[in-house]
Picture 1 (cartoon, rainbow, N blue to C red):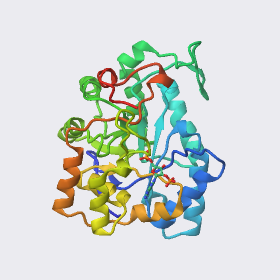
Picture 2: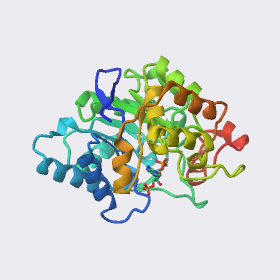
Picture 3: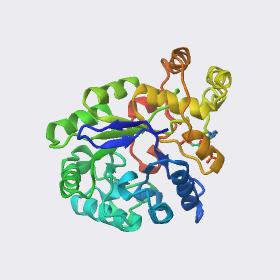
Length: 323
Ligand code: A2P
């Protein structure tokens, strides 16, 4: 899919990005996936310091550009993110430099704060883990991320990142940021799929000119523990896919694009990497059918509260809405 969106600062962002979080984490898997994606036509790579594979992503980009002289660095959109233990301004600066070095790039297209959680570091390479096995939260910097955002703004001014934003931010967090931000975040990367349509937050972002970017757009492979449901097994969604002769993944990607935001499908399987990139026609009736499945649902598959020792969505946890 060659569809793209435009950020509030005029920067173009391809609508389908390739997620590089390697669940296997085995050596070479990221490299193979990234080169397959670039050869397929993906021009947007979603990375993170935390994925510990920016080196392989960088190698993939370099080898692809070498083999395809007609494609230039500026034709590829690369996003990466700063991890929780690097929120102090000097550490944010270290993080972007470290990512640029590992990726082998002079600049990145988009730099995000990965989570609205500031935590203590052991070293810049390692988050500090407390005696309870969880992150050591920096309360002040978590509650007031102004110094962190100032560091992000500086990176933007320096041109090391062509756009900046946040990830896993809530409406209250964005409201707080609006009070001090000189640069409004260009994107908010959040979990979105038919079991978590996130209507209110998505609409809020549209209203503020913050482009939503959907992670886990395929709904992860996990079950909703209370009901045993999986997005991939939903009857209506599968009917929409079968009727059109498409895969469910293609339908879910088309649904996200039609709702107006970027989607980040992720796969390590070459055939699925390729089929996910093929655009399909989603009829008004199909769109309505998927919206009907999504309506009223609010189930989050990605909640790192047990790892972090900090809950970004305490109201949802109270209602048992997270895996
Ligand atoms: P695989 O790498 O074997 O293709 P998430 O929604 O959290 O991003 O999850 C992505 C998951 O969806 C991965 O486990 C990936 O597995 C799987 N996946 C990606 N594309 C497809 C597809 N077209 N059909 C089925 N599963 C897919």
